[in-house]
Image (cartoon, rainbow, N blue to C red; front, side, top):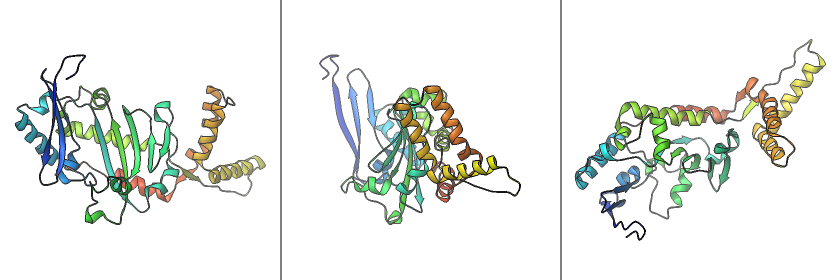
Length: 289
């Protein structure tokens, strides 16, 4: 019982006898119900595999029948994680140095253990992490399916932690039913792709000398080569450090970023690792069946 509001809550779980996993349901005497579930874990016993949209719809249809409400029409979505896992050539850590700083304080780049984060607020955050290591941390509660064992699994996940955040992506107040309509599934999928795409990627700057070049042009090529060797992420971090100790004003920081990062965008080619990651991330489609 909530001693402040006087509301009484009843809490319990529903167990899937096949997967041995549970989902949690809370209900109060004011007629409010909250369901917390990771559909892949509940349906398959792990969230290494993706649960199809059809299987997830069947799950919520069953729950609707169980609790006596049409959850699709009446339920508000308070949190949603949009995710895919790429089977990559290398461990996820190999790709982190090529994923650079994104502008905006809400997109702060930071690393903790085996996870690369963008953003510190759970209301909106995205992250890359090692799904193999993440699964092993559960202490046996999850097992990596045999078909994925021995692979490198790089997961990119976009977390929308409030109903407003989900609603902003969908274009209207988000209810459970939206998650099973093609129009909104496409919107969510495109949002996931965009959030990956807008992360600046480390690039290699092509340097070329031509007969008849002037001294200034040769010097600029050498400077570009030096910048390339130093790396975009190092340049970005130096600008941030200089700004934090007061060596750069806000406007000077913006100009420094524009001047120093321009070569990485104008005369640059993507590294092989980013080409691979791009191909795999952009190759995903929603899993319908």
